[in-house]
Amino acid sequence: MEFLVGKSILITGATGFLAKVLVEKILRTQPDIKKLYLLIRANDSVSAIERFKTEVIDSELFRVVKEKYGDKFKALVEEKVFPVAGDISFKELGIQNDEQLSGELDIIINSAATTIFDERYDVAMSINTMGAANVLSFAKKCHNLKMIVHVSTVCMYIEYSTALNLGEIVRWP
Image (cartoon, rainbow, N blue to C red; front, top):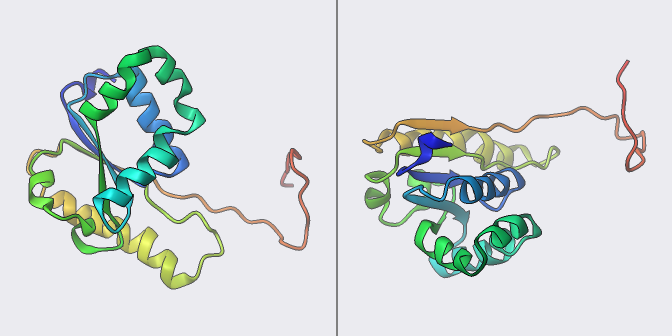
């Protein structure tokens, strides 16, 4: 985590499970990041901030980091974390004033995806394939970029006619 000191990071898919775990880990173990931008699918910054509060920072996942920093947690978040309204299915990620952001980023972590495995093809293609291409296109504009990480979804095959019990371990032959 030492590599992250002084770095500005953009994380897409910030309300998803994996990104929330990553955000918590960064805040808990490396508060010396410069800025943590979280791309949140929203029409405007007010909606992005609201989703950030309700779906990310207020989740039980952040209990340990809140306990670690106590009264200083809110100040840490206000100083370091910046929700950004956008959508990876749009060019320039749907970000207003993307030039300012692209000039500041050191790292992009793309974890945005639809994880609905029977999603309509056009929706899945727009998010999981074209969205990744849009992130790469945006990354090309980031002149200080040192790293880009793409987190892909994984697919699994289950015969839908077979009911699975919760807690059951499925063993494939």
